[in-house]
Amino acid sequence: MTKTASISVLNAADQAAAVYQSQEALLDVSGVTVQYSNGRQLVTATYRVDFSIKSSDRFVLLGPSGCGKSTLLKAVGGYLQPTEGEIRLRGKTVTRPGPDRMMVFQEFDQLLPWKSVLDNVMFPLVETGKLAGRAARDKAMQYIEKVNLARVADSYPHTLSGGMKQRVAIARGMAMEPDILLMDEPFAALDALTRRQMQDELLQLWADTRFTVLFVTHSIAEAIKIGNRILLLSPHPGEVVAELNSPSPDMHEPGWQTRLEQKINSMLFANEEITEKAHG
Ligand code: ADP
Ligand code: MG
Image 1 (cartoon, rainbow, N blue to C red):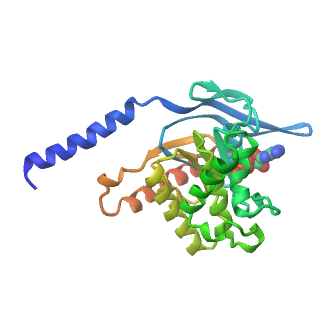
Image 2: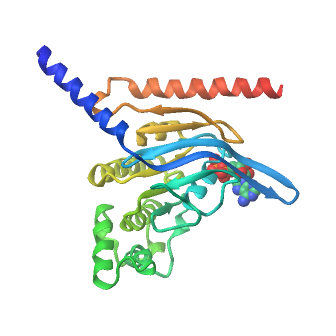
């Protein structure tokens, strides 16, 4: 490669980074603490968490079980209110659930068992009044095709495998074309091979549509594979340890995944020592 060519490649990457930096945040989470009241006891699930997500981010919340990942996702979904802090979507404070934030859960039973695949995917479109009749059907089919389930569009959930059920849930969320798709460990209950396949499919879907996703996982490998940005949370109560940016695909150097994994492991380990010292 000539010198000029390599400079122009760098400039393109710098330009892309500058455009990204100048983008307004789509979702702003600032100083969010969530507490649950358990009878007389108060449980602090997350403590003063800050992060912001830009359009087309694949933003991952990574942390051990019980660190408040689901709690944060539910707060963004508007299902529970922060005790302290604020969540804003496009500048507007989130106070309740809305069709601009669709959820995909870990459980296979999130579909309506008495409705076909097509009717499950159409349901929120029709129920929210977003689309009706033929338009709703076409939109639903468009996303059912995207997750490669056209041949089972008329089947019922109990006839599908776990992976297929999760594909339906993803299609249902995406068909609403929400501002942000919220995914709570959507592949955690799948076998290892299906899980890997679903991760690849999700990335392919993202390459097609560039949707914005907030993805929760406790798997370091999954976080690295899915996320362009990873927010590392400490054990209970969840506080931000660090935010890590995974390099963009055109900047990947051999071994970057292993290096990032080591970095995350050392941060979690360092954090554990701090926690042990504090309590020991
Ligand atoms: P994660 O998804 O990271 O595993 P959660 O958000 O589910 O963590 O839970 C964070 C903490 O909040 C845990 O200690 C959990 O026991 C507690 N918690 C979660 N939901 C409730 C609830 N409804 N009532 C009381 N405590 C809860
Ligand atoms: Mg959880």
